Structure formats: C-alpha cells, structure tokens
Length: 169
Image (cartoon, rainbow, N blue to C red; front, side, top):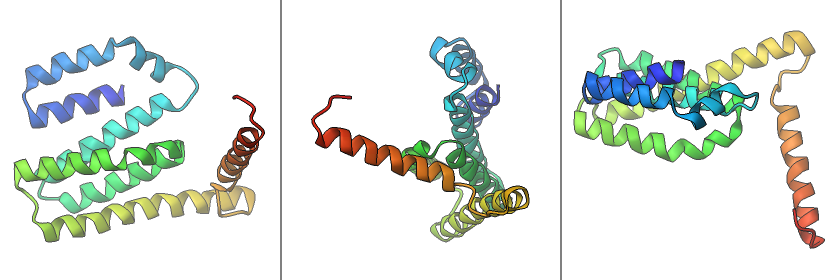
C-alpha cells in the first residue's frame, strides 16, 4: 500500500486530487502491480521504494525543510539498492524527474540542488553504515553485501562460460 499512497501523494502535489485518486485506484487494481506486490521476489518492495523515493524528491522541491527530505530520500534510495541492486538502472529516470519537476516548480537553485545531492549521499551512507554496524554485531563482518555481490559475480562468470561454450540459456 505504500506504493499506492506514494503515487497518490505525488499526483496530489503535482496535479490535482481527482487525478491522484483515479490513478491510484487504477494502479491498486492493476493485476501486474498486485502480482509484483504479492509474490516473494523483491519487485513489489522495489516499486514501493521507488515511488516513495519519488514522493520524497517531490516534497523536497516544495518544502522549506528540503535538506531533511533529501536526506530521507537518500536513506530510502540506499534501502532500494540493498533490496535489489538492479534498481540502480533507474537512477537516470528519477534524476530527470527531479530536475524537470524542479524546473517547472522553480523552487531550488543550482547551489541548493548540489547541497541537496550531498544530503542525499549522506542519507545513503547513513543507512549503509547502520546496516553494516548491525550486520557486524550479528556476524562479525561489516560488509553485509559481500554474499550478494559474490553470488552476482559467480552468476556472471557462469553465464559468460555458458555463452563461450555456445550453450543456449
């Protein structure tokens, strides 16, 4: 539901309440969205994180406390990437969204956007450090992404080996 409420809030802030309500109802009943949210692969969590990230960036363009919203957006962004690193590919889309939204709203100057990027990075680092600290307390190892990255590298090498052998996957 966080994805639907985030979409509603984004559209309410950028368009009007009627468009936000109708679009959120349509998304809430869309079978592929419900499938992503209901199965055990992290697609649903990624969609919810991405919509929440877009909401936070939308609020940052309109709120006087934009530094805090950038920091929280960075925190959510790190959570999105830890959930599934595949989502890093969407970086250009939400960056362009923010730039175009800020251009139409005209709220933040270039200096404030650069400072906001710093707060965004700080939010990312904050979550990574907190998660790493917790993981170290439990396992004795700070690098909590090690297993995921090792698996990704192993699968990449396996794919390359299959591909070189001429085996269709």
